Length: 410
Image 1 (tube, one colour):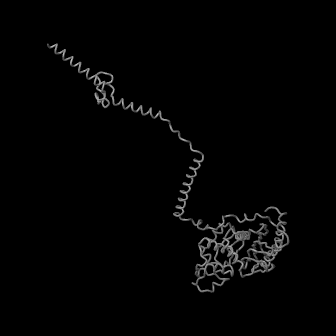
Image 2: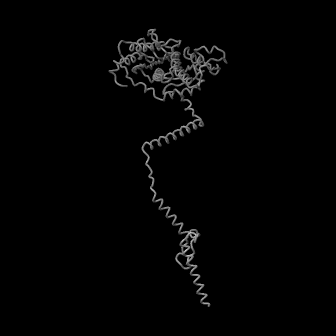
């Protein structure tokens, strides 16, 4: 009975197992709902028991993703064209340029200027040597005549004549250094007008007459009471037209003093022009040379030193010089001369721009030192030298070109 019971029991168990198998084959998901969530426990000692199932599935998913990415077509990067490269470079250069410009302005606004930077103002020509101007040809005929006239005992001559149109020139000892006397007021007037252009000085500002600036000799300001005032333009005009020494000292002081002027003269390229003493300079310590003065006036005439308005004012003041020019005695009244004379016991000089009736224009500067104080032969010699230049450039035809054609380069 017991075995019959066991056989019956085992038969029932086999039937239940077959019934469960049929149900699993018919409804596989319902029969094992957790099959995909957790792996079935492996039999002890089997190969699968030694391999963690979650790690195997994670590795498989990673491999699948790598295969999918490898199967996707890659997007190739396009090489930039030449135009794009140039455009990018231009943009970068623009950005760098703007940055550097901003930094430069910032440094300029925060760094104090040096004295030599302050002296070089707008309107100043670049430093150059006066000799660079004379690239024209020397005129042998005029040169020979000037040398013959200058050969006089007791007199030492320095002279230079330069024609504006052709650049032709002739002279005698043009680099000889002479006491400038009142001819020094020409570069002082030029420096004053440059200061007006740059805003350092106003034409209508008032200058006070002071005892330490009082100058004797020529002029009218010395008759006015100390403490009274004149405009800067009036002082500059009186300095040149009536050679007022008090007015000249006012202008020198207003421009920063003698050393400031000398620094500007050097920046212009003048080699022998210097203010060493207040006016009047009876000892002749203020100096210049014919080449310096001709070069300076030629630069003004060609519009390189001043604006047109300031140049017109400069020439107008020199045209109104009251003392007759030493160039004038043997010239016709139709010749117009913008000039400034200088006179000491030991030396006389004159420098200016001469306009001839035939349309020619030349620049002249002459000094004559005299061994005998106040020797009138010095003034007469300047007149003779001026007459020789006048006759040469007043001749009919083109004497400058004809004479220069046979002359060597200087």
